[in-house]
Amino acid sequence: MPENVYHIPALLPQTIEALDIRPDGTYIDVTYGGGGHSRAIVAALSEKGHLYGFDQDMDAVSRAMTDSRFTIVHSNFRFIVNFMRYYKVDSVDGILADLGVSFHHFDDPDRGFSFRWDGPLDMRMNRSGDMTAARLVNTYPEERLADIFHLLGELKNARRLAAAIVKARNTQSIDTIEQLLEVINPLIDPARRKKELAKVFQALRIEVNHELDALEDLLQGALRLLRPGGRIAVITYHSLEDRLVKNFFRAGNFEGRENKDFFGRSLSPFKLLTSRPIVPDDEEIERNPRSRSAKLRVAVKL
Image 1 (tube, rainbow, N blue to C red):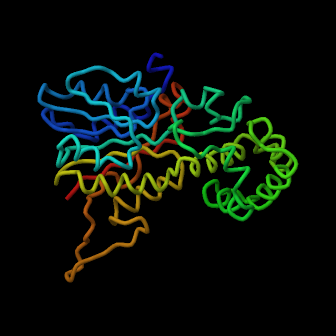
Image 2 (spheres, rainbow, N blue to C red):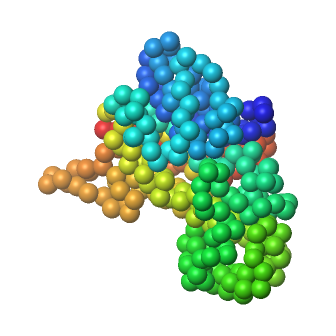
């Protein structure tokens, strides 16, 4: 599958510039996807440089580029420290994460990521995992479902959605996207249908894939792996993940709590290079509408 079909990388030139790539350096692209960012990084490397690409989706791994300066790793990015230890890499010069879901996932009905067409209620990034969206909606207690919709989807009618799902599943298992839509559509404001459904599916996807926990593990792993002066660039697409990244870059923790030494100097392990996130311009949004919500934040390890 061509790269532009699998995924169009957001903020590509801005990200490569932000990483300030050293030709002989070692880098990690923790979200290989269609390889757009990775190809640009490898193009900036000398024969001594190397890039490690991570992806938990075997579809992406099977299509990965072949280059002596590149190694593909089939794994969730939360395990970067373990895999770098396996490859005998103690420190790296830069880390990139594009947290967006690829076109390939959204546009494949069999993956269950989109409400635009019917298909199995799956949503697994790694298809070898046990938890699916169908299993989630059919087994989670009502209170936990409500918390997921409220905390991960930021939905005001979270409790009503959870109650409707529990009531429906007592009659028939909810196994497909169409079945889920039949249950929740009456509770969705028609004027905001796309946005509200996107939030429902976002909440389920985040829970199925433990996305926020994985992001926290990634950021802590990046702190351990980056050499002093090394850079990390993260592209986020919704407020939950953006808040985690912003707080960690600014304060070195996920609460945003700034710690200072005896003299009042910040103890943050990073220097934030983007006081405000870098966002796509109108031209990029027109070319790639799915980049509209992308935010790039960059920090350097002190």
